[in-house]
Amino acid sequence: MSKKFQAMRGTRDILPGEVEKWQTVEKVAAMISERYGYREIRTPHFEATDLFARGVGETTDVVQKEMYTFPDRKGRSLTLRPEGTAGVVRAVIEAGLAKPDRLHKLWYWGPMFRYDRPQAGRYRQFYQWGAEVIGTANPWADVEIIVLLAEYLEELGLTDLVIKLNSVGDATCRPIYQKKVREALASRRDELCPDCRERLEKNPLRVLDCKVPGCREIVKGVPSVLDSLCEDCREHLDEVKKGLDASGLTYEMDPGLVRGLDYYTRTAFEIHHGKLGAQSAVGGGGRYDGLFKILGGPEVPAVGFSMGVERVLIALQEEGRDVFHQTPLVYLARGANLSDEAFRLARELRRRFAIQLEYAEKSLGAQLRQADRLGATAVLILGEDEMAAGEITVKDLKSGDQRRMPRADLQDELARLLSEPAASRSHT
Ligand SMILES: [Zn+2]
Ligand SMILES: [Zn+2]
Image (cartoon, rainbow, N blue to C red):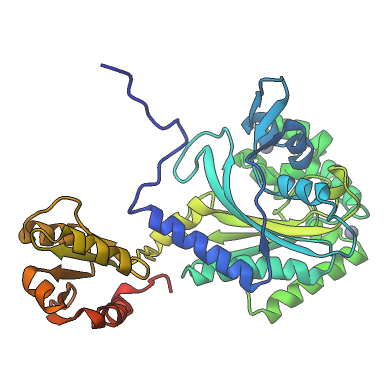
């Protein structure tokens, strides 16, 4: 027997029946992005390894432990993108579009890759939707980014959502806060996990983000970053809060929400879902005013988010929201020796409707059973009688109603039948 292949660990197939949910959540993301004035950008799935080492941060777990890095045939080190922002920033710089005061509002959607331990809802190839506002330090851009993500989740029908907000300061006030964190943790250094002992030297804010229970307990005693913000950062945060209030969003301040790298500035946020358990964030982001400079561009402020598509699908399932969307199907059944006519009619109807019919001739009974199996909304019957009279029989499978009509009336009848609520979109 020859070898049987399987999808690689941490990857999965999305088969028909499930893929319609994916199509819906992607379609809604595209729609909401457009409504907010964002345009799509598509960047390659692999980039130079250095881009992520610098753009995601050498000291992060993502870069140190989780990247899919490999040499190509010329020995260049390439990496499958572990996230979307670094590629977007590189693309904007490369296209010569990174200019102070020139605004770009971009969104992306696609697979990301991390060599992580696979568990429920976490895959090595996973999908993200993200958006970036590039070219402004205005706090209303931060507000819009948060509102955009919240709007999307609400549009899908999710309710059990909590927005968490924080500020991580800037180059003026963060060094002072880092010093406070070091001092507060100095006496308990030995109780921290090995990673955190190292972080304490290089990047003390990341200790606040550690998931190890022992560390979480210890950092409770650390003073809040909110008490260390400089005047400008304080004002920025107040404006963001004001904007969220004006947008009708409720949020919690969470001083433990940190993004520990130097190019992150001010706003940090996450949106959590109540039924996702310990790792409950469906998405998050913040301001990254220092990143363009680090990636070789001019100094351009920016803010953005990314969202885990698998997480959102789990949250939808947990809330019993069915976003299954399938174009209503019409099954065309035919009598003996009417294949020519049936395929001609199908081609005509397929300009407007989803039509299914058999390749081979089958009995009417077999065709009707197949229509049922496919979950068709309506069946058209083209028999010898109908053919001779220039008519067709239309059967509504939901109500069971059946009537014969002139072929000329068919398109209007189908349009009416398929536009009824039962057959239309279900995600709102
Ligand atoms: Zn730790
Ligand atoms: Zn500051």
